[in-house]
Structures are given as C-alpha cells and as structure tokens.
Length: 305
Image 1 (spheres, one colour):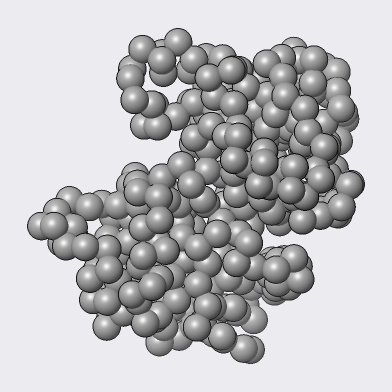
Image 2 (cartoon, helix red, strand yellow; image 1 turned 120 degrees about the vertical axis):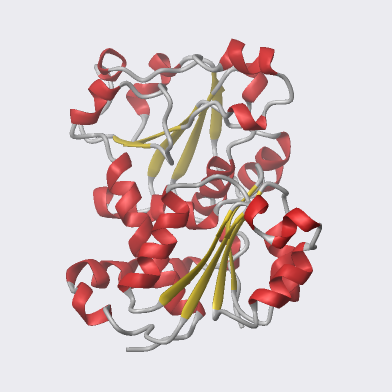
C-alpha cells in the first residue's frame, strides 16, 4: 500500500507516469468515467479549503467513485478530542482512500501510519502540499514541454508557504534548474530547505527583495500570498501583506513566454488586470490539479483500465 505524504514519496519516473495518465484523461475523459465505481474517497479537511477539497471530490466523481466528506474539525470527532491516529483507523472502515488536510505538520503522516488504506497529504501546516506540486508540474509541463532547464522565481511568503517548499523539493531533482527567491527578509525561505534541498542537490539560487529586478530572467514566476493564518501577530502580517503585488507594469520586462503560477487563493498579490495576460496560468493550474489528483487516485488504488 502506497501513501503520498511528501512529493519525494514519488520518483521522477512516477511523476512522469502521472503526467502521462493526466494527459490521457484530458484527451479522453470518458475512458476513465467508471474506473473507480464502487470506490470511496474520504476527504478529511481540518482546515479551510475550496480548490483542494473540491478538486479531490471532483476527481473521484469523474472517475465514477463516491465521496465521504469532513469539512472542518468542528464537524468531526476531533472536536471531542479524538486523535488523528484513531480517526484514520475509523475512516479505514468506511472508505478506500483518504485525502487529509490538517493545520499540524505531520498529521497526515501519523494518519498514514495508522490507516489500513492509502493516505494523501492535502496540506499539513506550513510543511508540505504534494498534490499542489503535482498540479504545478503538470501546468509547467503543458506550457513549457519540459521540467528541466528552467529558471523559476518564487515570490512572496517563502517562509510559511508549503506549496513553495514542495515545488522547490520536486524541481531540485531535475537538471538545469535555477531558483530565484524573492521575498521580504522576514519571509525568506527556511534555511533548512536551502541546506537540505538546494545546496544538497547543487541547485544554484539567488535571493532578492526586488521582483522587478529579477523578473527578466524567469521562465516561471510562482507568486504566493502572505498568509495571515501563519503569523503569530497581526502587526507583522499587516506590515508585510502588500509587499509584492504583480501588475501589468511589472511584467513589461518579463519574457513573452514566462508562466505566472499561483496556488490560490489570491488576495491582491496579482492584480486582476494580469488575468488577461496570456502568461497567466493560475486558473489552468486549478484544472490541472483535478487531472493530477485523478491520476494519483488511480495509482494509489492500483486501478488499471
């Protein structure tokens, strides 16, 4: 039985296989419409979510399966003090696979150690978000035709952004990757990721506080919001929340084929005026997330056509 807790649980070869299946689903969705008939996905979301939860549910429905949903700790036995381990054991009696989001880092890992069915980490605190990374990788692949030889800029909250941490980890396994880190000093990428991921894999990187200065060299610009829920005090959040706002003016010197990604939700860090730019790929990302989650569910349930 396989789980997906962090992106490195999948090999580069397996990611390529998932992309291939996702491309096939896009080309012929009807072929996959009933392959999970009789299977049930439990979505356990102890933190607010729109895209991730609904995309998992849409993915399972489009594979012909069914969904059992917990959309908040207050509506589950967690409110009574039930442990993550016990919840995982209980849900294993009802479902065939679990997608779990939790505010505490490591909670999906604990669930996977106690469940008798596959567990997918749908985001744990500021730690990991591997299925968002799969959506990111499919988007880059479909727009660029490659996952190597890219200069990728990450902008905004690089300290608490679990999507940033996961994508950097994934890209570090491909050749010819350069990373540009753009953030205020208070929200820099954690030093352990620089050491254990970038330096350990000999990935060249540079840090800057200036988006406009860095943007001309980028093939991919990954924008993130400054997340209120990750701050310990409101004063720091209010001071930093408008640090980086992408506007059409700031894109003047960007490459004509640069991809603008964002895991969403956005607040105001990308102006709505950018939405009409052909380089804006963040709504494609949302759709690609559904296809990659479909491919992942098939893999973890070991469903063959």
